[in-house]
Image: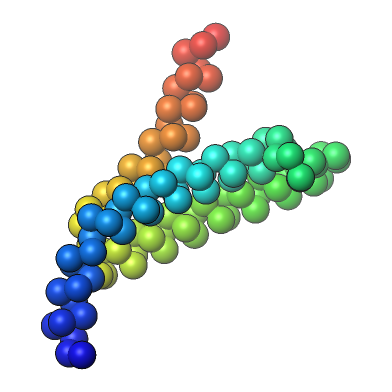
Length: 104
């Protein structure tokens, strides 16, 4: 298979990949939020040190996943997937922050 054929197939799968990635990102962001606040069912941070460690781990995973996805999808030229990744990674935390701020 030539490089142009692989490029064409990658671009053709852009819409399907965007949908699957969007659902996966929303699930990932939900789990990372639960880990960062210590509310995950199997993971309970007992001490302040464990809470800080969990929050730091969740932030690192979030940042690396966001940056890695932006890099990979921009290099592959998958525009729909790139925007889906960006929106589903940044919109849920922004909405939660807005709800928390304006609910007071």
